[in-house]
Length: 308
Ligand SMILES: NC(=O)C1=CN([C@@H]2O[C@H](COP(=O)(O)OP(=O)(O)OC[C@H]3O[C@@H](n4cnc5c(N)ncnc54)[C@H](OP(=O)(O)O)[C@@H]3O)[C@@H](O)[C@H]2O)C=CC1
Ligand SMILES: CC(C)(CO)C(=O)C(=O)O
Image: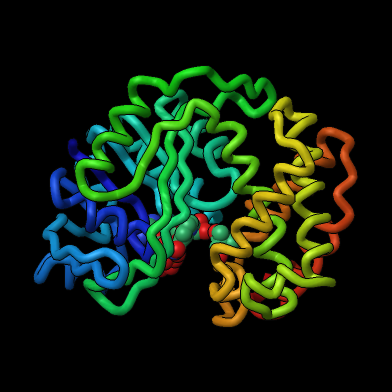
């Protein structure tokens, strides 16, 4: 497959580096990372081990965007820009692995070439040309119905199966999922429950195994599940809460991505996670007071630190 990874920071470099074992991969990244990869290749260290030679560029227009698959691995707030760039080419399929509900933004520009994706691998950049896998997780890809008519099918689509097989060939755990609409919302509930609470309280994920953080995370996840249900996605309160508890236990020592953003003074993905629950709830007449309060606090912090 010819694959372009748009926004090869931590996650995109991990996935792109592994995919380059068997496929022709181009990473759209920033310098000096892109320059080092172009010169010396990309090293994947930690829980996975690879040294591959994908192409790398900082200029999306110099990548061949008429590829079989474009993977979008930018932060959620850069999704619209990525979609604009990808629309200048003609990728056959586009799949985002970002957290948050980003598929709608991609589909506005790229139509039904967009399939949904989610990743639970852990990745962090060590330095230019090197990425560490901090946790072997799983990638899911699949069709997502328009969220308002979220009828998932019984079997995964052929195109999702092809993408999953291409990932597996390279040693990445990946499944085509016929229930991707539900998975997106379950992941959103997990991120709404864990990311905002750990960022605001500055605690590792494992702290949410105990009260009072546990109760706040559960409230946020239940609100997300309620919004999912009015959008037609079958996600019960219990399932959302269980998913939070499972991820808290599995990632107990982790600093969540939102906590890392806050601690490094970077912009957070509040709009695509906590804010998305609030906005979609408001559109559908579902009150989401816990998420609303946390979104307001995170945005207050962002405005103070990043000038709005
Ligand atoms: N890291 C992880 O373990 C996981 C991350 N995720 C999700 O995946 C997404 C990406 O996360 P992560 O990899 O950690 O984030 P990073 O910030 O490390 O990676 C995103 C990269 O995309 C770059 N980028 C953005 N726009 C462009 C552009 N137009 N051209 C070239 N490069 C661009 C960014 O550069 P710059 O910063 O200079 O704009 C950055 O290097 C997030 O939504 C995150 O929540 C999901 C699961 C695990
Ligand atoms: C699953 C979780 C909460 C792991 O930390 C995550 O996705 C994140 O930190 O963004």
